[in-house]
Length: 330
Ligand code: SAM
Ligand code: SF4
Image 1: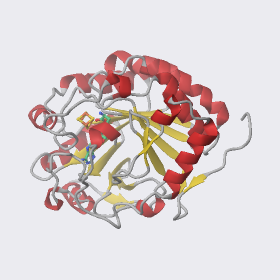
Image 2: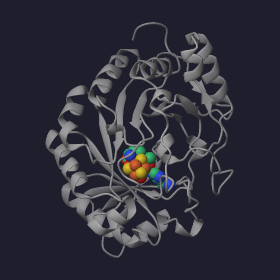
Image 3: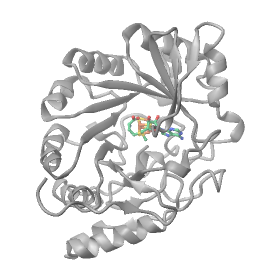
């Protein structure tokens, strides 16, 4: 590592931050109803961080603030040109303490770039797949499942470490829990189910639409032998299935893990969100463009992180704020 060792960035509740999620764009080629408003209004391109601006901010988080894990997200990150080149440039931060570069994608545009992402040094890829039944997939996303399955196949063929993420919503894809798990298990693909969070921006969320961890497990238990594994610092609770496979459940709503949250989020406009459920943002890009020094940007970041709210656990319910999941990145 070059330069002085980073100083951990910590909030007033003592939670040290290690992970940063960066949204590359708010745009998307799907329209998952749980994620974005009916008629999304895309941000003007000039307001999005350039690669150089993104690299400068991420560099500060890694070099000076001790962030070790980075996840690129969106919107759909693969809509942005040259993601492999960006991954490769971010790789230079490995000598400054960065340990992992990951990406979350809907998989639609994955097939042609899977090999290039691996070659660029991507460590870990999450693909969202909420259904394995074409009609249910289309009802949820307004897109086609075929390119996503091709993307998954291409990533597996390239040897990219791959996980599937699946949001489960009552009345929409609850019936997919078992077939999805069996499909993923047959391919040896790790799968995590995610509880529906109140971040859709169209008031579609309600507590009774959340399929909780216990309910997800109840769908699987009559058909498979499940064994709950001890919890780690990972946000998911893991279960061994039939002794030779593992699924996770991210139970943000029914069993929030805010007390151990080690994440920060940067939206595509370079605004820092210290909590997925917070309405407070700290604009880093405007000062950066106005010539702020690293010390000035770091002071803004440290203050924002210090004031990170307790999280969903203390303020459950619908989140009223100007940006939704597709803008901030899950
Ligand atoms: N477009 C990419 C994708 O779909 O993977 C990356 C961005 S998407 C916002 C990241 C993750 O957030 C996806 O796994 C998606 O399923 C999840 N997500 C979006 N809205 C959600 C919600 N309301 N509740 C829970 N998860 C949500
Ligand atoms: Fe797009 Fe991902 Fe949101 Fe679906 S979950 S609308 S793919 S950003």
